[in-house]
Image (tube, rainbow, N blue to C red; front, side):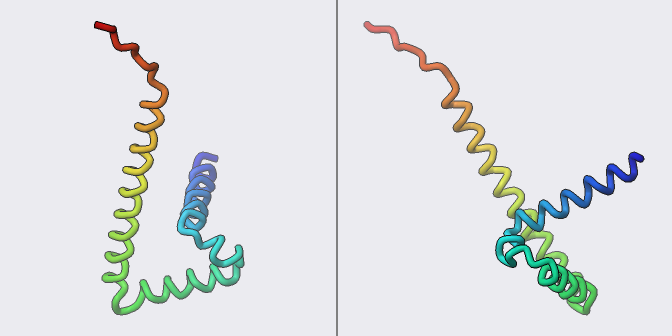
Length: 92
């Protein structure tokens, strides 16, 4: 049962990446188009330049994840600052 839950979670995360990349909107949720694109990508990754493509895509993805994490942290910081009560300054 645990393996099934882990697999389900894994598949949901992969679907989330498809959504996050904007592919669902760009393709009007056309599953045949998405599947064809994935098949093309798989063929390219399995080809002669596959290792170079994997490196390029991995770097691009890691950079984007890092940028998004920084933006999320900055947004959280802004929200935290907004939640702080204002402290009245003593009058001289």
